[in-house]
Image (cartoon, rainbow over all chains, first blue to last red; front, top):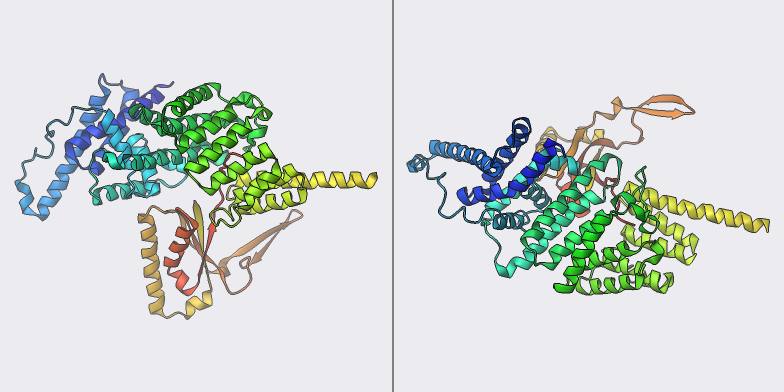
Length: 426
Length: 121
């Protein structure tokens, strides 16, 4: 690891702790968060050149506190010019630590930050950007690069997020026990979104986005450290690890997608798989069942098959049935149809797909047409399969998927041509 | 999801508006873009194209380039400008288009932009 990478790791870990202390001391999440970012930037420049201070956390706290104090003072000066009454406040009243604010450094504060950044009053785009910055310690410029949008756009999403927090008067404290489960669901969703944004990027212009999966995994590990008893946190982490394990096998050097059944499984990362398997096995045997654990369990069954043909499809089907029962959703039905086809044959899978034709949430979705195309191909109906591949290719918004679907359709045309001409010859 | 919103208009129809109407349109267009910047949804573009009489159209056939005067699309309507959004859904992108003052006089076309990502197959 280079000095820069080591410093970066150190800073990202410290960021939420320092922010937590500051917010307790000064209130004003928006001001404190900016100050921490400035302190992180200063450290990122100074530490690799000079030396990492003996107590890095204290260094960041000092630098960030100074910025907050400056900001509050100039804020106050501004207001003083406007309202003379404000000047009666003693100058140190705003910077003196509140009693008892240092007693729980780190743990609870970081957890509170996770909940705060994923507060339902914020838009999903703001939740994602703010979580990466305030909990992850990542700069606006880095978030913008990873999401392929201008820095100003991310800056705007962060400031809107902070504004919502301020306007809604959301306190810096853990949510009440009664809303914990629902609020945690949103936190996990934000982490899942970050992971997915990085994972589904396959090649070329979006290569750098693999950093997002690493960041999502790091943050989910941190959340698991804070909530080690929660089965869904463990399930989400396992799902990420088992999915990430397949990353190098899922694309060819030219960026085209390799379906699961055709992947070179020797490229799968066995260390990530081992960690994911341990996590999900433990969660499933000891904790309350949830959708992330079930999706991780399905990924685990795939991971355990040395060859595609060794896949335990009956077990996967059972898991999808369970998943559909606890969180019914047409996308789950779509995946269950694949498992049904693998266990009971393509016709059974196609019959299940028919039940989705009237469901407006997926009737026009490219995935429905793509899955139908695969099952029709399995059933030997190449004409209909080709039509479904073409229908899916028209609807997808991913160029990578579109190229894959067009190639599958073209392959069937070639095959048909070959068998037709063979027929003519006989 | 990223979307491009294409403003199609008709230069003759634009000229036919009263000065007060054109002023109002321009003011509303400025406000409209400012709101998109504030919402964090505008990610690119906000480009206004020159009058179609300034356009050239290029074709290469058998390696031989041919450059003709005028825009590619024939007819009275032409592409007058565009901007790129990142927002939650097609519904939201369409809602934004309805707030564009150009939609009052002309038409705004909303098109999803393709990306390189791909879900597992």
